[in-house]
Length: 345
Image 1 (cartoon, rainbow, N blue to C red):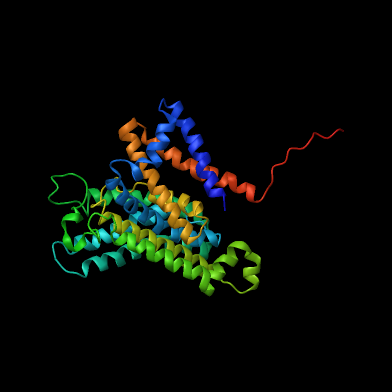
Image 2 (image 1 turned 90 degrees about the vertical axis):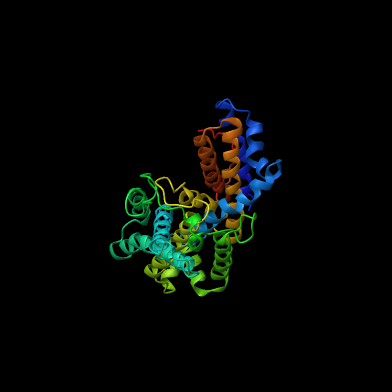
């Protein structure tokens, strides 16, 4: 249980060394990343951003964790996130400028369906042909990025945008805007969906037979086969659920904080959610806490870039270190390091 805490502490030390090599004050850099978003004079602005940044990470990570627990490795959540955003935005723009209450719920369904169908590609290929879901789902991310660029320059391009790539601003379309539930709180419907996903995932894994089968398959695959668990059913369920949740995350983002479909819409949430899932020990409550921590590094990283001139790549390396040290320290849960005298021949 101490491994995630140790991983964070070791990441701070290694990150400080990295920042020192870049000519930045290491202690101040760590303080800016972890302290300023919560306790600086501008914390009243940064704190709501924790919910905005954390919601998509938690929503995607919850879906990924179900598959990871069963030994099903979906690495393509970024692509499912993109397709979900395109599907949700496409629904909104198809009805523009109609003002109706049912447009936003239809966008949610469209986003979930888009992500689900995109995840079904590696799922069906694995079930029917035994392909590797890691490679297929990862390669589909690059296909999704090309589709995003094509849509930004073509089908979803704003006809009143003076030739600039990108769709209409959905924040200016009341029926499609994922607005804050409470003004100034940062809590929009994506945050609510993430909290609901945490609750349902906890119930599924601890109170439902399907959750037991997921855990059994991951911990003892041979025993799961003897118990009659269907591997194909789990593959379809886990990948489909992860795709639907990632698609919803994309829809909530494009209709809220981002506001429009653009070539650079995706910012890597699908990959960062992998870190969140493992940092949270694949447990719904742990993922909720890990999502808040990772959101803190996003916001603190942005502050460090503006305040200390930190390169954005350095913040990405810092986040990657977190997963690296988490996996490295996980070795200590299975192996013990011993200092032994060298034997004499």
